[in-house]
Image (tube, rainbow, N blue to C red; front, top):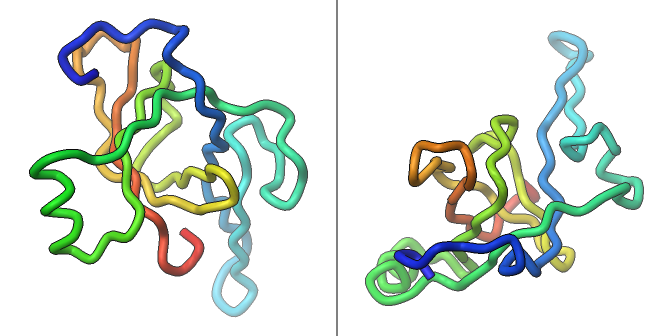
Length: 122
């Protein structure tokens, strides 16, 4: 799918994309995860982000195994400037770290990134 044109109908997989919010300072510093729409991670999502989710293939798989990544994939979503490598993805109850999100065609239509299962909950 990498060199093909992606269509909105290809976005069949539901995921939650979350960002970390830190409040307080010093010993009173607390961090919490929230969906991009502001829904707390502990609440049911108000809406899901739909994506095209496909496993790593070929050389990517070998590189992932060398780095001991157990679960990794490529993800394509509609462009969203709020999605950064500081965010995380939740799919089917598994938490994934986002690696290097980029706008492949530089037109702000699509955002492509790799994810890997987080070891410590993102």
